[in-house]
Length: 625
Ligand code: WTA
Image (tube, rainbow, N blue to C red; front, top):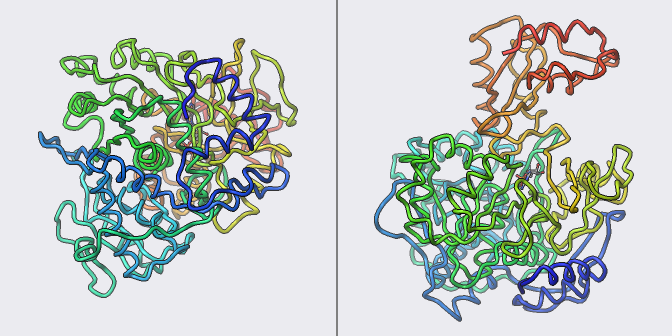
């Protein structure tokens, strides 16, 4: 179901807000159901128990695989582009994907995995990860994919929080020139967690510690399994997956997504935003360890029956032309990446975009963080050759699907603007008191007024935290944590997080998590972490640390402990040892001041009169890195 004109967009959006039941029922007719729904939508943001398509029964993999096997079994479902460029093409047709998913589903079942069990996936970006994800969905197990860049401690926290029964990993994988010893990290993580079995897929063929009692080779498990496996029939609201993400406080949250609403929401937005058709060769560069990979590498493209490309490597290996060579090689029509990658490649020089044929491209997309004008123009001119609309898609792990974005070739684009809400999305800007800011040319905190189908249903094991985090700041609304401007045309531009979350290279990291890791170091008394503007990463991590030790002696130790506790993605770029932190009389750290200092913005420190000791600010500025 695709919107084909701006007028159609307007009328669909209107209907979706005024009569959500009628609208989403029409959309849902395009999927395959075992039993149709009895009720389309229930619940609102006062009673945090919303449901979509209640009474319906389905399996999402029937939509992602079986449907296409019937119609076009030999069509390429997945093209795999390995880290090491090769001339040959590795791919899975829909039939082959079906066979592999069923074999692995049967393998999981043979280990006793049942509907509702949690399976943790800690893997590199190879087809096994995609197959394992879908196999979980096939048998009704809940997948919890943990990004391969997280440390053993972070992995173990996530395994324990979700009470995962099985862990799936690789021996080790290469990303660019770096080898990531996934199995070793799993062994470390399992010292403190209670997983029954670890399934190990071969990739690098390196020798790994293999515990014959609990470890199983992927190839042994799937060997002799049947290539058919009846799909487990799920209720619409049965959980499909848990995905951890960072918030402004506390431990990472395991956001839980439903089956039917997620399927309908991700697929509908995919087809409309990207305007794909059955010949599309679509490449999303995100890792499956993040929501973008879940929704727009695995589920929505496969459910839509396009060819989805999966890339194991990094944009700069063997050199900065890699992305563009992959586009040329596979004749990519739709390309979806993050601003940080665009900025990194832009910095490498224009020559890497030359001598490659990018003529297959029709639509470009960006996601994950605000894009700056320069990067937008560079992408538009050098990659899209000013012929490809750029869809700047705003959404979140919590929203499951894109929320604000232009529709390629249908709605207007404006550099750095996500532009207009998609059907079903009813955004509002509110002031600090929660009062709606009406009209155009205004700025405020971005909230949503109404539930939408692909919305996360809860935080796994902690519904109270779900309510407190998203629905308590502003009563009756979902609070996104983002600031946003609405311009004179009513177009939305996301300005970035307004809470204590930092967005580093499109990765969300809570400052509290980093501080907790730093504070575990015995030579640290206290710390405060903020983000600061970074040319490539969007934001960098700046840590102010109180310690008796100074210089490299302490900074190296801090970097090490953060890498151990979370992963190198959270390692502070700048660490300033200070005597004091700017605190109010009640002992609260004034982060606003730290953010300004970290950004070299000393002119606008604002009111510092409530500080216990205003001199602290001068000291901070003197010691600025
Ligand atoms: C930010 C990623 C500006 C935003 C899908 C959001 C964006 C957070 C955009 C969610 C965009 C995402 N423009 N900012 N197009 N897309 N963000 O959960 O701050 O990893 O709240 O989901 O990324 O990050 P998450």
